[in-house]
Every structure is written in structure tokens, then in C-alpha cells.
Length: 156
Ligand SMILES: *[C@@H]1O[C@H](CO)[C@@H](O)[C@H](O)[C@H]1NC(C)=O
Ligand SMILES: *[C@@H]1O[C@H](CO)[C@@H](O)[C@H](O)[C@H]1NC(C)=O
Image 1 (cartoon, rainbow, N blue to C red):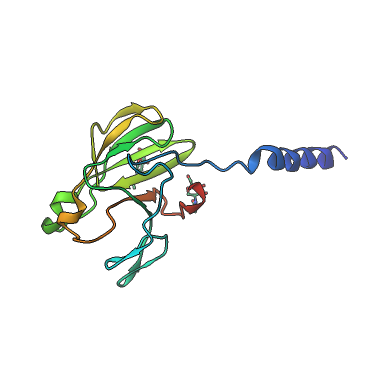
Image 2: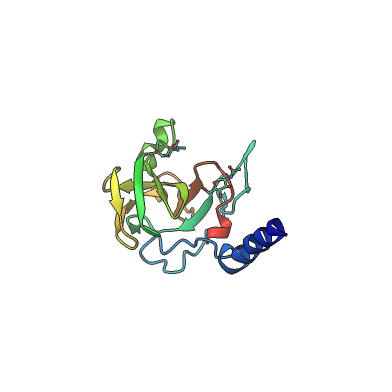
């Protein structure tokens, strides 16, 4: 009986509070609703989209070159991210590893103002790198990737 009551309270707690998934706040200036990159001549922006012999491990959020990138919630900065080893892509080879709201995730193609410390929701993290210089005609975007490569779509 005690076990049943205990289990029932867990179920109720889940129903009441558990369904509230974390949501990302605005990531990029000029894109208040985190509009996603859908499709362009370079590919598609959704999680799992084909990328030659592999698949896309992140979700792409549209962001114009040079736009200001914001913290989507209160975050801790865990360091710089190396995106590419190819020197031809050096112009956009930067990003940040962050955590907040119990999530660990990375933002690619962002030039960080800083790579340690903490940033409050809505404050500046850095600026969007010049993606058009490497991928002309692409929908310039921030690539959002969970540290464990799980699907970030439900957080948007
Ligand atoms: C990956 O991380 C997310 C967010 O931190 C977490 O909810 C999920 O359970 C993790 N998935 C795996 C397969 O470890
Ligand atoms: C991101 O930072 C976290 C916390 O320092 C670390 O555990 C994790 O390994 C880093 N992830 C990646 C993929 O760099």
C-alpha cells in the first residue's frame, strides 16, 4: 500500500511538473522565434538530415552573419568548440560549449565574447561568424548540438 501511494505520487508529480520541457529563448538578434533553417542548396537544417555519409547531429537556427548571439537561458560557459579541422573553413571555425537548465549543449559558428564564466538569459554570448564566406547562399545559422548528440528539437 505504501509503495502504491509512493508510486502514485511520483506519477502525479510527473504529470504536474514533468511535462514542462525546457525551451530555448531567443538565440539570435533578428530571429525572435528561433526560426529554423529548413532547406537550401547546401542541405536541410533538421536533426538527422543527411550529410553525405553521416547525419546531422544538431538543429540549425537561422542567424544572419554578424548578428548578435544571446544566451537562451542562464548559462555557464564550458569552453571553446573546434568545429572544423579543414583550413578552408577557418573563418567559421568557432563555437561555445555551454550548460544550463540541466542541459549541456554546443553552439557552432559563433565567435564567443568569452569562453568561461556565466551569462544571464538574453545577454550577449558573441557574434555570428561569416558563414556566407564559406557556404555562399546557405541560410546562415547557428548549429545547436547537445553534448551527448541527442535530438534538441523538443527544446525549441
Ligand atoms: C542526453 O542529454 C539530454 C540533455 O542533457 C538528456 O535529457 C538525455 O537523457 C541524454 N541522453 C542520453 C542518451 O544520454
Ligand atoms: C562540454 O563541457 C562539459 C562540461 O565541462 C564537458 O563535460 C563536455 O565533455 C564538453 N563536451 C564537449 C562535447 O566538448
